[in-house]
Amino acid sequence: MTIPQQPISQAQPLSKDLSGKQAVIDALPDHPAVKALLAWNAGAVTDAKVAFAELTLTVTPEEIRGACNALKAVGYNFFEDMTAVDWFPASPRFQLSYHLLSHAMLDRVRLRVMLEADDPSIDSIVPLWAGADFYEREVFDLFGIRFAGHPDLRRILLPDDWKGHPLRKDYPVEGYR
Image (cartoon, rainbow, N blue to C red; front, side, top):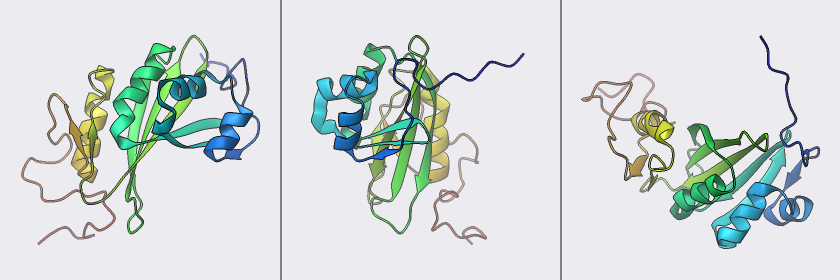
C-alpha cells in the first residue's frame, strides 16, 4: 500500500523558494512553526529559508531545546530524525538538521543549528523526544559532537577504543596510525 503524497502544509503550501529570515516571515506570517518560534523567542531564529517546498529555520545552538519545546507545544508531535554535516574548512564548521512533523497539520519543518569547530556541543533533545537517543549517539560517534544532558552518550557504531570521528572531513582516509 502506498500513501499518497500530501503537500507540506494543507493550509499554506510553500510553492516558491525564499531565502532570508525576513523574507520568510513576510511570506509566511501565519505558518505555525514561524509563529511559534517568533512568539517564543524571535532572537533565537537567525535565518529562515524555503527551498523545494521545505521550511528550514535556523536557531542558535543555545536555544535548540527551547525551540523544539515551542514547536512541540503547537503540534509538532513527531521527531523524524536528525543528522550532521561537516562544512570544513568553513566556519561555523558543523550543521545539525532536526526534522519535525505535525501529524495534525500535515506539516514538516527542519530546524538547523550551526556549531563552531572548537567546542562542538549542544543540548540533547532526548528529554523531549526519546527517539532522538540513537541519532544523537550516531552524530557523536561519527562527528564528535557532544550532547549535554544525553542519558547515555557513547559510541553506537564504532568500537569504544576507536580513535577519532570518521565523518569529519579532516579525518585521515586511511585512519590514524
